[in-house]
Image 1: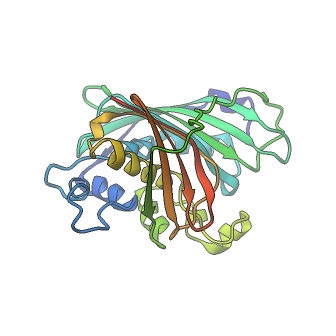
Image 2 (image 1 turned 180 degrees about the horizontal axis):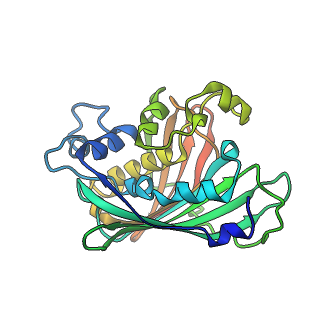
Length: 282
């Protein structure tokens, strides 16, 4: 990682558009529509009265890629560490948007231990400039520690309750889930090329962290929102371990007033893949 140059990196007002096809593809890529008789998920995959899953904001924050490239990190050793999302208003079925991003902070975990790169980004309407969302993305740069940067400054995690969960949902992923999800724009070969995955230390290609993130949002939408996307005001997670396509995601949830805490695990391996989940409801 280039330090301290990375601290000054930013990317302002990248213009892009998305339409109904992109919205439907995103919903399909996080498993919606698998049951053709599920009328609750139909509005996310059918252009009549189309709804947008709030976590789609995370793939619209296009400036992040430019900062990663200019920071000089080892791309093949890069993992998604955390994702935080604040929703200002629901995304429409189609829009022209501007995305901006800047380096928020870095944490040097030491040689051989990697580094954290925190990037703050926004997604806004290109005409009105009204914000749709603000995000903080934490990247775990496994091959970039020991550059002499600050050793403190990691974001404080949300703590889930100690009691038994109030709700638990099981959502299956497809063996080709990563191949579908990468069509949203993340073409990292770690998610499709077995040789690249082995070189990175995995037995086979892993699912995108943001795909698991979307599945977690599906679970909360189903359990506590009656699929009303306008109810989700914030959605934060810490990625704990990779999920393999084809595994079942178990989401355990705790509700306290307007706060839903959650964690996700891979049912087949009993491995936690998302920790410290936090969803704020309206």
